[in-house]
Length: 613
Image (tube, rainbow, N blue to C red; front, side, top):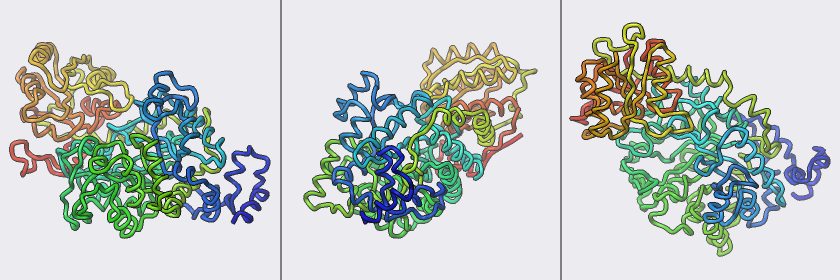
């Protein structure tokens, strides 16, 4: 193998290139792996060449290749002092470059809170710094750089990148071509910034209105509709040479517990799983999905051991690999989450995940503990080196298919040409307009007319901006309505308005022609209900906008006009303003049913419901 691989160096003329690239090319027919078009139906990658690469790796390099790790800082080599301190405290290194040198990690994950994503040029520079640091190592390999760019309420890269409506909004739009366009545009922008793996789309079927962790991150409650949109988004992302990741297998859509803080149990029967949860994952696999993320959930009908799916051989190897025939990369959800740490220590979790069939170990609480645990498991014979090689081959196959073995770096010119362009922003606006859902419009309250009702008060909840958009929601709505010819003022009343805040809003409402109130996760005893009722009692037209869960509509019995936007990012709020002003007609249809608040067994607004004008 080694002999044949040296021949390819001369053949591809790599001798003239920098030595770090010679290492990559010194494999049999690797050129084939490098010229693969990055589509979901990519041609087969040169397995022999990749196996030759693996055969030359040390055991420590192999262990590192399996990890995807967080690291603080805007730069790979010169982060701010506070980020150096955080890295030393949590990871035992100062910088991303040191992390790579010490542990030879195969992947890095970007977070806003880790200060990785300030602006597009900085992100591209950070990505390039990470690739340079990794390729400079002996037998250096490019890095899979990942992030959670789901759009809607979960986004790590904010403005000026293009931000789209989230999954449930896309579900309300119901357009496969819109889902594909979202993936294509978002993928192109991520790729331009050096991010080559996106932990999106969410393939969970959200059938539990009380779900605290998925909710509007899901396309909806109908498995076939979810499956169609998942497959479309996958094709969009992967057509832009970014690995898409369907999550959270085997399905996190019916839980009332957040796996970040607890250990959810899914009580679906095997038959229900087949008909509901499995459907979008099958569609993703059929669409050629590059990676699938595991869920830290117990699913007794699929594995009655009490282990989370992330650590379950019957679920990951038996069902995902065996029954569903998936041979792409399997990545864990974050190993810092409570759902995976409940039963085993941080040293056992990564070993058990690999034994279950996982390829990438994401964000362990301590990389040192996890890395040494995997190394020791191989040295002690609990894991074989051949088992590691299997996962590394999948990871390298993905890197080859994405063209990273050929060129891992990006350019500032590419950022300028691609990120947040006028055409991309216009695409996001057009898609958002097709998602706003009108649920109530008694007596034709909507649309508002700026000639007969020029003065508008915007009140309500102002949750923190979900994804580096401008926010706050009341301000964004007021500014958008003002641009559309109204005189709109914003008054934030919060998610739990006090009696004084409600009084202020009611007083202000008496001086205007109409009131728009943004609601956020309204419950039976929420003071947001009191606010809406009191505003309605002023006799002014009141328009409620559910800025997260559409289920708010069931709690707002007094309102005569109610819209759902499924998220409070600027793009969705501006689209809602255009609907309120009658510039566009509402076209969204509920992708989840809304049950009655007083009798949850009865449906108030069924799946597919939505008004227009």
